[in-house]
Every structure is written in C-alpha cells, then in structure tokens.
Image 1 (cartoon, one colour):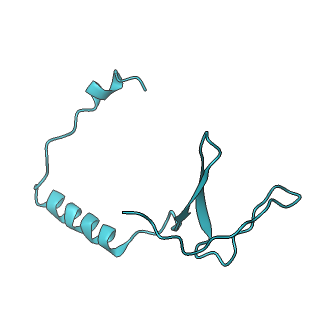
Image 2: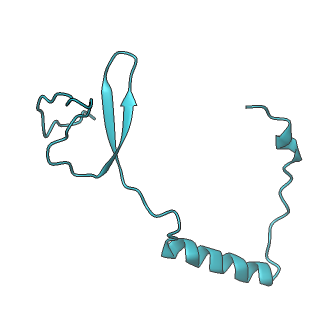
Amino acid sequence: MALKVIKKYTTKLDSKKRMTIKNPDFEYYQVNIFDDGNILLEPKVLVDAHEVSANTLNMMDKSVKNMKKGIVSKPVEFKKYLSVKG
C-alpha cells in the first residue's frame, strides 16, 4: 500500500546544522539516514521507564498468584546460550 503525502515543503539547515519540522505531530523522531542520502524520520512516543501499564500489573499479579498455587513452568536452562557468540 502506497503512503499518501500530506505535507511537502523544502527546508534547510540552520547555522547549527539543525532542520525544523513545521507543525510536527510528535515530539520525538527516530532518524534513519541511508547510504543513498535519503533520510527517514519515524515518529516515536516515549514512555517513562518506571511507568508500568495496568495490563502488565494485572499479568504480574496473576503470575504471582499462580506461583503461590504451585502453577509454574519448568525452570529455564540458560547454559546452552552461554556458548553463543554475537
């Protein structure tokens, strides 16, 4: 599916090599610079690292209740991953 262009304008770098986005919809963008010179900006929504969603808290509560009831999986063996070199 082709993306529809909703804004198109020319911009230039200022004296500090910064570019301005007119009326941005997001505060943060991931910048991807390609070897052919193209630049892709992907909007990002950052969340507080200490903020835990209600869904995650419910899942954790359920897991603790299951553990107390003895409903657990087998322990995970990590030794086989120690030989993997990245």
